[in-house]
Length: 118
Image (cartoon, rainbow, N blue to C red):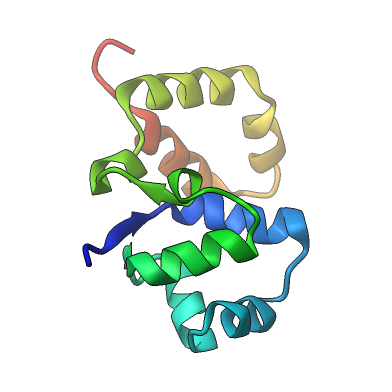
């Protein structure tokens, strides 16, 4: 069986949305809790099809939402970056982070959204 790329962002959000305990989910899926933590932290990017099916069932979702067609789908597109930059520039984030001297956070966020012709 072919392994599938796991949509880590969806997995994290779904666990939070359903207020599920990681240990309970791991038990229901039939994996070690450490395996689930590796999935959640992105240390493992692929999941066995059987585990994906079991996980989707526990999370009451589809395989399509839980997985990605390729690893590239995990990363932001140029349009995603542009949208993020526009949201950052229109937010009051700089005003909030400046007084507490979180310039490294500001710099990292800005660099993460820098693309040509922005």
